Image (cartoon, rainbow, N blue to C red):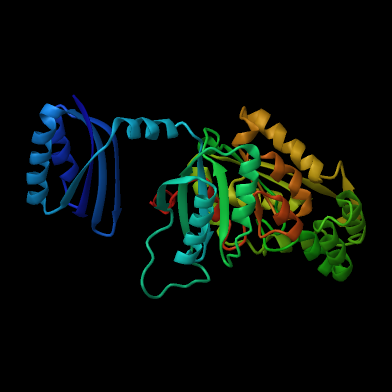
Length: 405
């Protein structure tokens, strides 16, 4: 007669423990139905679900008990009814989702609140893992710290339930915490292209504002920029008006600005890792080609699409060349790059902060509002407001042990 037994092992982690246990199961012809292990500090928790026969089960438990005593760990056996096992197997066919908690510090209250939303929506937590490195007890600089917890959950959610669940997660009154909710499907595991806005996303400034300051029209241009980013006026109209105010500015100013661009936190680390693991990267900017090309040379972006300022006799004319890269054009370019790279749109990531980034953020498989304007935060499904650009790596499922080997 078939027996199903759950074996749980607790105690101090010992080298060779798994090998010893598997040897006993193998000797008695037990079949491993499932296995899982977690280590925190020096402590081990392992679960093994086995199928055996009534004739062999007693010998297996006796040998495992002796081996556990020899290794100094505790062991517990729990019989599992066939009906309970079949019901558990049936649940495995349900969708899996990944919830990522990201911030300078992620505390117990925040994890508890998220777990409460998961429970109330009838989902079950499969696994919880820490994505960031271990935190020292003292000397932590919270202004540069990173903390990330990834929760894997399983359950059946309709499209309507999915949207409701995400709204409930995002409406949690958690200060200093970003929450990402993604379906754990084949596309999440095979992202290949990441497209970035530049101004206020890759760099902590608007380059057109920097040019305007040098031209003595800073306040005028800044007011138009902010209105456009809030979605209050058409981007092309605002762009044309702002560029016109730059007429007469010496082109040498552009070089000075480029060499002193304030990069956003985590840019260098993020790009280093993305290049290492083979992602294609692009800048799709409503700003200017000159500054995008500078970033491309410095950090190795694969593609750059932006706006070209017209220059005559070493001075800006107040006009631009070609079509404006606005929100609609960014979405078109995202689709074009997916075609060029031979990938599905669901494998693309788009990152931006302004209203003109929403079309590409909405189109990409993973759209991220980065330290974004209120309208963008309200319409994007994912957002990062607590840490730097390298927080994107955790949304892609990369751990610090992968990122900083």
